[in-house]
Image 1 (cartoon, rainbow, N blue to C red):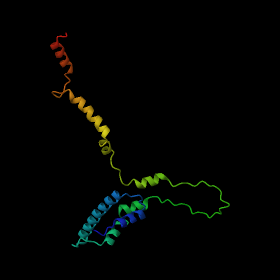
Image 2: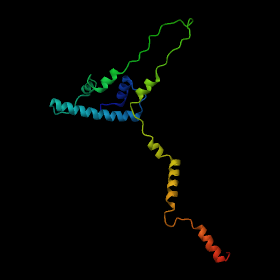
Image 3: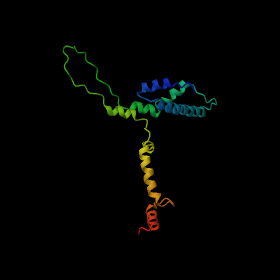
Image 4: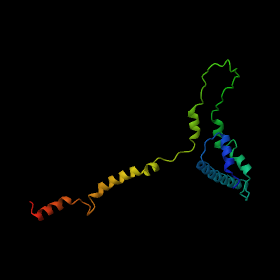
Length: 166
């Protein structure tokens, strides 16, 4: 299982068209790949009737990329974007032409295979929002707690009565 080198996995993913993969995403992918290899080796061992359970990484890789796997079908069913061949032009006779940029929507769609973390955790850890929500809840329940009511007005009435200022 240690034969899975992160650099090798990253280069293979780049070769498959996955770019700008973060270290965290790569580690998660590597962990999932190890699980998949273990599962595949277990399935092959059960199908072949062999008891060794350790398949060579080359055969596991070949099995994972056969024509029947979902990853193979997804890769070969996606539309291919080819750019037209460049026509050699003299620099002196160069006329400005409008070149179309590659479609950004397709690039974004290719990068969206890893889901971002939910925004709930960000909202929960915002200290200002937490302060205001706690303050609002405290004010709501403050009147119901014994000993927390404001008695200043009652104290002034008692003081005035004792001083005889009525």
